[in-house]
Length: 276
Image (cartoon, rainbow, N blue to C red):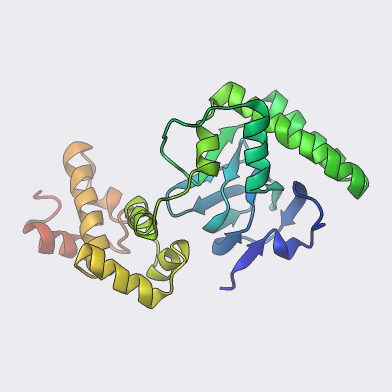
């Protein structure tokens, strides 16, 4: 699967720091490799969207929208059952736009908070009208769009700060301290997400061979063995603490059949899931 670089491949006007794109599709995609060269609001209108980043993952329907930090991600788009289409209004903006906003309105971000590359928000009447206004602006001349979108960018951030606080701004400006920390974070945050080694290596911006080498250096075992152990440990938790049956969880923890799950579980714990 080819990697898509956004917004570069959308042929948007390069003079605009804040830009908008009305994305429509009638084809579903699964875990498409995306490189976001800018931070992005994805105002979902039709369908469902799932994204995986190095430090977080999120699934939304069209009652919600996403704020995504620039970087590598995997994106799944599913069509609406009603319209049989997918639509998202994309608002791109740079790190410098965020820093200018923070300086202009004098927000204090000195407190350390957990960094997540994606945050989801629910629509309300104000935000629905906001998205409608973006579509109207997209019909104007480029020179007027440029000026108005800079104002609209500030508008939506001010509103989200008012209703959600400033924590999501930390996610846009805070960087992981080291490549080592980013690598560990990616593995730990996605240990139950059933991603392939190729997909995980993309999120860490490594080749598959480098990812495997780094993995064995840090975790002292192979990726396949480590992820299997973590998923079986999660299965044991579900069986013991949530009283779930093996038939309810084998797919959730990454097994295609009940028999293969039972065999792996017994190999690790010495008893079958039912006995456990």
